[in-house]
Amino acid sequence: MTDAEMIGYLWTHRTQDHPLYSDEELMIERGEGVHIWTRRGKKLIDGFSGLMVVQVGHGRQEIADAIGAQAAKLAYYPTTRQFSNPPAAELAAKLAQLTPGDLDYTLYAVSGAEANERSIQIARHYWLAAGRPRKYKIIALQGGYHGGTIATFGVGGSADQIKAYEPYRWSGFTRAQQPYPFRDRGKGTDEDLVRRCSDALIAAIREADPETVAAVILEPVQGASGFVVPPHGWLTRVRDICDDLDVLMIADEVITGFGRTGKWFGVQHEGVVPDLMSVAKGITSGYLPLSASIARAKIADAFDRESTEENVHPGTYAGHPTCCAAALANLAIIERERLWENAERMGARLHAALEKSVGGLPIVGEIRSRGLLIAVEMVDAQRRNQALDKKLIAKLSTRAWERGAVAPAAGSVLRAAPPLSISAGEVDELADIMAGAIRDVQDDISRATRTAATA
Ligand SMILES: Cc1ncc(COP(=O)(O)O)c(C=O)c1O
Image (spheres, rainbow, N blue to C red):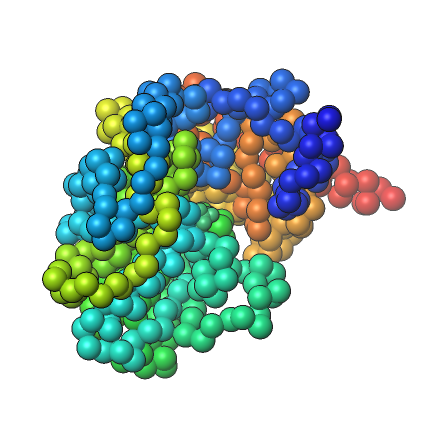
C-alpha cells in the first residue's frame, strides 16, 4: 500500500493550515532536537514543538530509555483507591515540589481536555463537600480553549467548533472578557484594560449569582486565540476577585506549563497560586500522553480522608506507570538544562529579531511574546484595526514551510513556540524564515496594489 492509500484510512483533522500540500508531503517520520523530517526527506525547524508540546526537543534517548525500562518492569497497572505505582507517586511528589504554593495533590488523566474536566469535577465535588451544593457554574474567558470534549467545548471552543454539539450544551458555562491589549487597549493604558475586564468578570459572576458559581477557568496566556498575553496584574486581579466572591480559580496551564513562558508555570509571572491547575503537553514533552489536575491543600482537605465514598471517578490510564516514568525523565531534563531560563532568553531573542526585521511592515500590527510563545499579529495594511485577509494569513504558514520551518498561522496571527532547548543559532534561523514569509506576503500585497493602480 502506498503512503497516500494508508493515510486515506486516518480520520484526519483537515484543518487548512497547509492548503497547498498533499497529505503525503505532510507525513512526519523523524525528529531530532528542534528539527523534524518528512517521510520524503524534507528537513524543517519545528517552530511549534508539534502542538506546543515537545519542550525538551525531539529524539531524547534518556526519555526513550526510561519508557523502555518502565514498560519492561511494569507497563501498566491502574491507580484506584487501592493501588499506586512508584513512578506515579514519585511524579506526584515532584509536581508538588515544582508547582507554586500548596498545589500538592495530583489527579492524573491523559489529555489536556480531560485534565480540565477533572479540575471542573474536583471544583464541583469541593463545593458539595463544603456543604454548598448550589455552586456548579464555570466562568471562562472569551477566546479561551480548554479542549475538544463536549464538556470542555461547553467551557471554551469557538462558535465553529461547537455548533454541531449545540443540542448537547450543558447549562452553567458562561464567558467573560479576556484582556486582549492589541485589540482592546484603545487609547487607554493596560491598567485601564485590566480594570475594565475585572469589572466585567465581577459583573459576570454577580449576574450568575456567586452562590451558584463554582470556578473561573483561564489560561495565563491564551493559546488557541493567538498567544494573547494579558497585561501584568490581570492574574492577580482574577485571584482577588475569586477570593472576594468565594469562587475557585482554575489555571489551565496545558500550554503555559513546564517552562514554556520563561517560568515553570505561567501563573508564577505574578506569584499567583490557583486553587486547581490543569497540566498536560509539556509534562512529558509528548513522548507519551499524560495530564493532571493539581489541587491545593484547602481543596483536598475538604474531603474526609477516612471516607470510602468516591468523589471524582479516575480513568483506566490515570497514573499510567510508563507515562509517569516518561514525565520524570522529561522533568529531569528541563531541570538539569534549566530550560525555562533558555525559554526566557531565546523568546526575547526571537521577539527582538522579528521586531527588527518586520516590526515596521504595514501588515504587522504587533509582535508579542511571553517566553517561547511568540505571535505576530497580522493586520490589513490600510485598515490596521482589521485582521489581514484569511487567505494571506494561511499563505504565511506555506511560505514558512517552503523556507524550512513549521510556523502555523491561525486566526489573525503567525505563531512560534519552538522546543525550549532551541539554540541562539536556531532561533536566528527561525526568525529569518518567519520574517522571510511575512516579507513574501507583504511583497505580494504591494505588487498587487501596484498592478491595480496601473490597470
Ligand atoms: C490551553 C489548552 N487547554 C486544553 C487543551 C486540550 O488539550 P488536549 O488536546 O490534550 O485535550 C489545549 C490544547 O491545545 C489547550 O491549548
